Image (cartoon, rainbow, N blue to C red):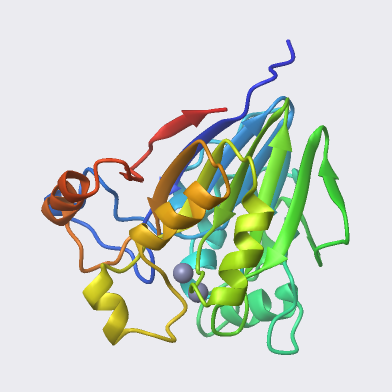
Length: 263
Ligand SMILES: [Zn+2]
Ligand SMILES: [Zn+2]
């Protein structure tokens, strides 16, 4: 039966590098990956270490939308469980970066001597494609805008069944891009936003390509977004840090490990 809802699962909430331990249990230690189920479409936003925990459905169309090719967004790809399914089609969309296509970059990363086999050696049927001007995955409409991030990154908006959300990670809030993101996010049901740094940390890390929860709140409010969820958690922030932040900013939600959102 066709479902008219999108189901999002945060499989990876951490930025920069995975962390593990009891002190990260609630807000997660795996790097960027969100699974989106919408009817027959099974879409993964980024392939950080969180994608390793995916359990792909049997009869869905599998797509991975990569924001960019930094390690924390692709390092789980070689352990994506669907790669071992014989002839399972998997389409990976990503913009070329630094003069290389996504496939050329991935084939540099997953290749001897860094990794024993290449993505093309797995049983699945993997196709890399650059992001087209307009993209529909079944009934899911995908639109994109360029982020402000070292080397570039892509912000996505997915719309299905009358609901939409924006995935804006690896974004630094230079004013021109903030305006563009407000327009891009207008009226969305959900904004998933890069809030890696606290305010004081941001002052020391300007130019690293990340933002803060309070700027996310400003953008969500200006764009009339219904719900804001912060992601790309700094590896230096443990669960007790987030508990303090949620007290300080009760109107802001910080993504929790394996959190599910239905839109
Ligand atoms: Zn990142
Ligand atoms: Zn990045």
